[in-house]
Amino acid sequence: VGGNRIVNNAIEVMTGRTTLETAAKDAASGAIRDFANAAAGVGPIPRAVLTGLTGKETFPDVTDMHSIPGSEIKWSILSQMVGPDEVGLYRYFKDDDYYPVKSLGDWAKQTFGQSRRRDGAQWAYFNIREKADAFEEAHTGVSTQRGTRDAPDRLALRAFRKAIYDGDLETAAKAYNRLLAYGYTADRFRQSIASSDPLSGLPKNSGLRRQFVESLSPFDRRQLDLAWGYYDRMAALKNSEKILFPAKAYTEAGTEARLQSYRANPRTEELIGILQRTAGQSEADREARSANLERRSLRNSR
Image (cartoon, rainbow, N blue to C red; front, side):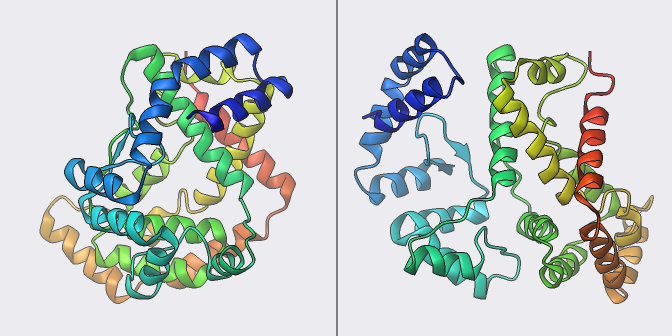
């Protein structure tokens, strides 16, 4: 119980990221949580039952479970019973909106060669979002990033953004057409990009966003830089939403007419052109854009 936490804290102390006193307090405060996770991890059935009853994800911490969209509960339970890789492989071929975290090549390397490739920028992005979430909860007692939106287009949007990040033009075009079929508009896509900001969970007007950045250690500061780079690639279509998606009209009938027009003539060539131009930019351009994204995110933050 708590073995992983003790090892991680020891590494943090040895690398100078934290003090021995802080590491000891963290180990002590996490003892109950570690015991609960060890008890729940005796087999897949207890976790699967708990997921079915609560509609929440039990991994990695049963004391801090996150909600699962209703459409994903069955897949979460099945993953716990037979394994996430097997379920992911099935959905890869059967679910038009599903875009796997690992490619078929990565899956084969991990399954047969026992090798795993971790995307450092992606890891840093989600790590920073979790730290920002914990920072907000510690200062306000609430967490605005928790919860989930159970919308039918959720998987298609995730596939679209992941394909953009990976530079997978074929999948991006496919997911783009799926979003049009779901009735996606320019307004919604603009909002989805804004919500992907690594610091979007921290409100500007409270001062928490700037306080969080100023509180980061040198290591976490580097993680934030990588997170901005990850976000920059996902936000490659920023300011192009009106080219790719119809604007919402004043009436539902007007919006539907615009959607029908885009569905009949999707702007797939424009999409691919934008992504190709973005992929051809230099590393210096990417770093400059990442720095600008951070400045804009912190603008008007007290």
